[in-house]
Each structure stands twice: as structure tokens, then as C-alpha cells.
Image (cartoon, rainbow, N blue to C red; front, side):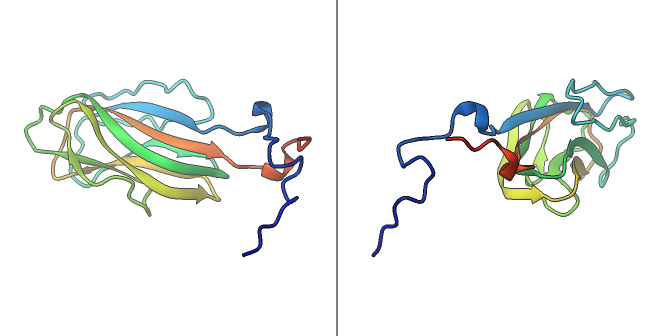
Length: 161
């Protein structure tokens, strides 16, 4: 087997400086299924979709995160902040309409309920992650979250190392 050398610019011991790397980020959004108003995420790049949620039902989807074009999603999931007391054994799952990132999980107790590797899904166009309500209406407060990385313009990053 041949080992090819000299292909890494700057040699094998020289790594890119941190200011030229792109770090993954965790972005989250609270969704209160018992409320008619929603909190702002505080991340202007990721516009939450405020929706009237009281009166939700099985089959409803609630957008909670916009994924910009050129981002890779590594993980997505949710945490139950306030447990569901609606009595319908309601479930939630994270989806973008095409891909399901978590299986349906009941939300009657608090804590991190579900997350899964998203197989590093690249969004070539902007997408939206939603919380899908299954089996019955809920009144829980959910923190949906995503781990993603911006790969736009990777070739334009200063390459001086």
C-alpha cells in the first residue's frame, strides 16, 4: 500500500488556526403548547415561527427552527421543560417534512427525551424543523434544539496555514 505524503499544505504537523475554522453551534427554541404567544429565540438568524398553539391536535406540526441554506445538521432533538398534563398521552417528534430526526416520544415527564444523528444532512436550500404532534393534543413546553455547522463558502476561508 502506498502512503502519499506532501498533500497537506504546511505539512502534517501544522493545523489551521482556530480563527479559520468553523465550529458547530447549538441553537434552541422554546415552544409552549399551552400558550397563544411564543418567546423569541434571541437568534436573529434563526427566525422562530410564532404560532397559536393552544388547541393543537394529533397530526399538527409546529415549526421551531429555520435552517439556512448551506448548513449541515448533525443532530436534532428536544427536551421537555414543562411536562404535558393534557391527559391524551400525546407524543412529539422532530421532522423537517422529509426527514424524521427523532422517533415519537411521550412528553408526560421532563428531561431530554429524544435526539438522533441526522446523518449530517446538508440543506442546499433553507429548511424548517418542526415538532410534530402525534396521538393527542399536548400542553407541554418543549425546547427543540439542533446542532449545525455553516459550510457556506468553505473555499473562501483564508488559507494561509
